[in-house]
Length: 494
Image (cartoon, rainbow, N blue to C red; front, top):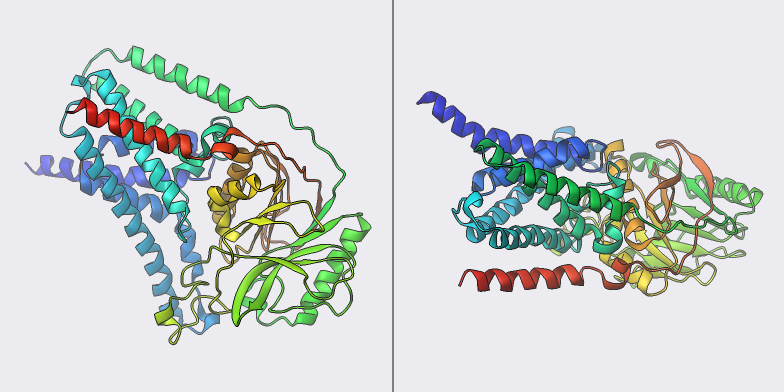
């Protein structure tokens, strides 16, 4: 009896927790090929046990978003060491709890759609419809989360960098579609396992699945070669200024650093210099006229509100003459709820920041049209795609990921690479501590500066008007297919 109880506990809690941990580790790492299939197999195996689903989701987020702990220490903002520790752990725990609830709700959907039926006794067509429906429901859920202020890094982004060929499917189906493909692969492994366990002929299912996966890799890997050019050199300045120490630096210090970055740009005949998010203080102006066209992250006032922006300085300017404001703000970190305004400035040195326009299209008049992502706006593929459909020919991503560890740098880079694959556009990254460099339209890294060092670099981005299937149609085909499968499932069960 005791042995049976322990076995049930393992099935309900240990195995799904381990599955979530493996999935969390595989997000944006080279362990995807090993860990993610196992993780999704475990997910499907326990999909009709609600507590198991919660454990999987909780630990998936706990591991994949563990960099949130690096908010600690917040002593530089006036919090005590203990209070800072409690805040960091509470934020990570809350996000993990939300992840657990979301997967719990998906498990309820599994219970409703699959019921208690034995999958091996179900006919192939109804089973296929139901599994596709459940997988697409998860994918659309991730799509919805990417439109919120939550920095969601889910299954859709986990393929990069481990399986860049399968990730190539994003040119047709985007991150949402990649999420669906992975869930289907996880179910296939689960189905093969169940057949093998019950001594049912599983070889046909195994071989068919392997052939389909091979074809998907072939399709994802096929792409027209991109002809690169070198007629638009761009200088990037990775400033490596610690956020926790930035308040100590004067405007003169930043201006001297910017002067040296301009000098580097001029010596390399760069047509543009780009600096990371938050480099310039509020209403920053140059003592001497700009010697090169500049796009620099900074702050500006608008109608009494503070905005985090990418500011444009043309040659000869002392004050910025163009800008694009950050729209997607970090809850508590940048965007302070109204009822807290009188009690807290949040977890940011500048206090509350207000969002700008939700359009990510930026035409500064001194650069070709751009799609701009400031910090974790890069996780919203919908708005990047919309900017490219408006005429943007290059993606620029400006960020400040200090004080977060290399783990977040890698996840951020994976997001940037996926946006490039989806739209077949170069992505030029400039971050305070990294990643900074250039990603090609096929998602491959062309150049990357060393992280956590102050560096200047020169990159040669392509400006392209080409659009992929995903750029043109986005997630509409997937959503329409989901609706079709819902109708089909209802019709087949009534």
